[in-house]
Length: 176
Image (cartoon, rainbow, N blue to C red; front, side):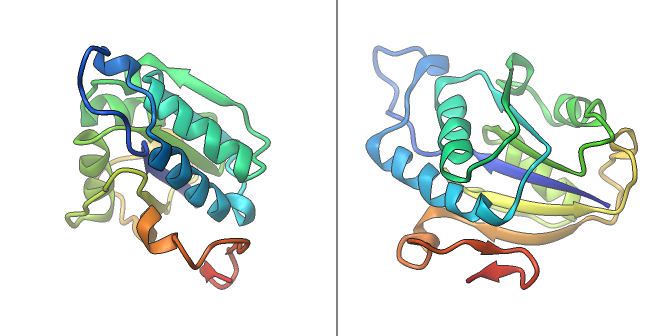
């Protein structure tokens, strides 16, 4: 069994003079990434993959810091402006020793990825985290046809008051 943590980057500054790839997180985006990061105090991904876009990399860094994650963030340019088949290919190349992988990136591809894996439409707002369990032993077996399950779907707004000082209870499947 593999677990895929699909995290859409937190809120970034609006388009302006800054190139899309270089848009940083807003203050709200930083706070939201930290809220989501608190969920990771009970989850320890073996590998963290992030888009090279400033907003995705900053989200990954905030989550890793607040969640006390030991895996290093790996930046992949291929996770920026790529499509669903390319995202699946990236994930098929993950080391099989990694049972839990966090991937940080962008819509619309992340919504398509999560929806394809759980076989129903999902909406991932900025900073949203989808936890998907996949009944495979090797990442190279990952496909849209796998009978994957949605274990959790969290957005920063729902965690605003409930997670201050609380951790994800993996055994109970809830915040506690």
